[in-house]
Image (cartoon, rainbow, N blue to C red; front, side):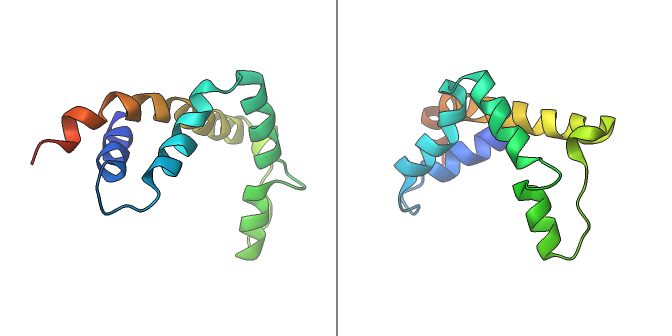
Length: 102
């Protein structure tokens, strides 16, 4: 997570990225949202019947996966939730130090 946060911090502090403030807010937003709200969002994303991830898998002709009904699927979903929630915080901690160094 720290490596990904450092990479995002360097990319979003580059002058070449258009709309970097929007992406900063988008990545930092999960840190300031309520944990319960984030849990509901991830429940919708990983839903077996109507979830976004299973819809994307369906576009690739892959059958839906019961993410939240299996132990490994729930671990993957929870890991993604934790990374998603803390990535913005870790990204904000790095930008000044990493982007200024050549």
